Picture: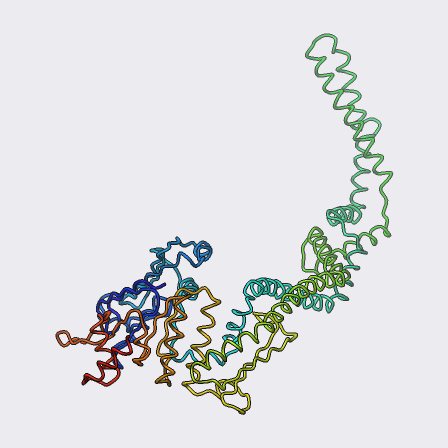
Length: 550
C-alpha cells in the first residue's frame, strides 16, 4: 500500500507531505484546487515522462518520493531480476532537474523508467477518468476474463513457447530464402565446381611447370654448353681430366717425403674425384637431353589453364584457387542437401507449434468456463448500482492466429435495457453507466489480482444519489483486498472513507500554492456540508453531513 507521498517544487506545490493508511481514503477539493496536480506528481514517481516545465521554481530541482509497504506481495523476484535491493517498505524517488533531465531511484538505487513502470504496474493502479474507455478494448477485457479464469501461469508458458516459435519461424524463413538464392546460383556454381574439380589443381604445380618450360625452351643453349664442358673435360692431352690426373700423379710421387705434400695430394685427389663425378653427370645429362615439342605443348596448355582459372576467379595463386574450390563445394553441397535441413527445421517449428496449440486450447477452455461466472458477478454488482436490466455477452472465438495471450478473439456485447439488442459497449452505455461498469470490473479484479493499491479519479462521474452510495459501498468492500484511495465530488462517497483529505489552494505573499491536509472530524463535517450545499453552509447541510457520516 501507499504509505507516504512527498512532493517538492512541482507545479503549484512547494512542499507537501502526506501519509496514507489502509482501507478507504477520500480526497476532495474544489475544481482547480490541484487534485490533478497531485495525480500528475504521483504519475511521475510511477514512471511517466517529465520536463522542466513542471517545476514551480525553474532554478530548483523537483523531488517526488513515494513509500510503499509491499512485503506481502511476492515482489522479491522482480527486484532480484532487475538488480534492486528489496525492502518491505520500498521508497521510489523521482528527481526532475532544471535542465529537464530526470533521474529515478528505487530504494536509493538508480534505475530506468521502464523498470520503474514495470514495478508500478505491480503495486498500484491509478484509474483516471479517460481510462474508463479501456472497457472497450479487447486487451482489458481479456485481463478481466483471465483474472477469473486464473490463466496467468498458462499464458506465461504460452508466451515463452510463442517466443521460441517466432524465433524458429524466422530461422525457417531465412533458410528458405537462403536456399532459394542458393538454388538460383546452383547451376553456375556447379559448373565452376566441376571445372575446378576436373582441373585437379595442386598447390606448387605452377612453379614446377614454369621451371620445366624454362628448361625445355632453352634446350639448345643447354646442350651447347654441356658439349663444350665435355670437350674441355675429356680432351686427351689438354682436357681438365687429363691435366688433373697428371698433377695428382706428380703430388703422389712426392707425398711420402712430407706431411705437407701428403695433404696437398689428398686435397687435389678429392677435387679430382668430385670433378670426375661432375664430368660424368654432364656427359649423362647431355645424352639424356632432347627436344620434346609434345611435352612443351602439354606443359604450356596446363600452365595456360591455370592462368585462365586464376584470372576467372580473380586470384593470384593455386592455393587461393583451392580455397575457391572448397567454397564452391560447400555451396553445391548445401543445395543438394537442402531438403534435409528444411525438413529438420520445419519439424522443429511444427513441434513447438503443437505444444503452444495445446496450451492455447487449455487457456481458451479456462476462459469459456470463467465467462458465466464473470457475467453473473458483473450483472449482480450492476443490479445494486441501478442497472438491474443490464446483460452481458462475451463471445470467445478460438482462431488459427497466434496472439500474445493465446489464440482467442473476444467480443464484449451489452444490453443496457429490457428487450434492447446487444451492442458494443462504447455505443450502448452512457458515461455514468460506463463508470459503474468500470467500478464493478475493478471490484471483481480486486478479488483475483494481488494488487496493493488502487486510486480512483472521479469514477463516480455521471452518477448521484442512492447509486453513489452503492458505489461507495463497493469501494469499501474492495478494501478487504487492497488499499483504496478515491478522488470524488460526491458527498455520499466522501462520507464513506476511513480517512478524508482535502486539496486546496492558498495565497501566500501573492504566491498561489496547492496544499493537502487530512481533515479532523469537525473539518470533515464542514467539508461534506459544503459539498452538499455550497460555500454558505447551513445547519440543515451540517445535519445532513453528520447523518451521512454516521
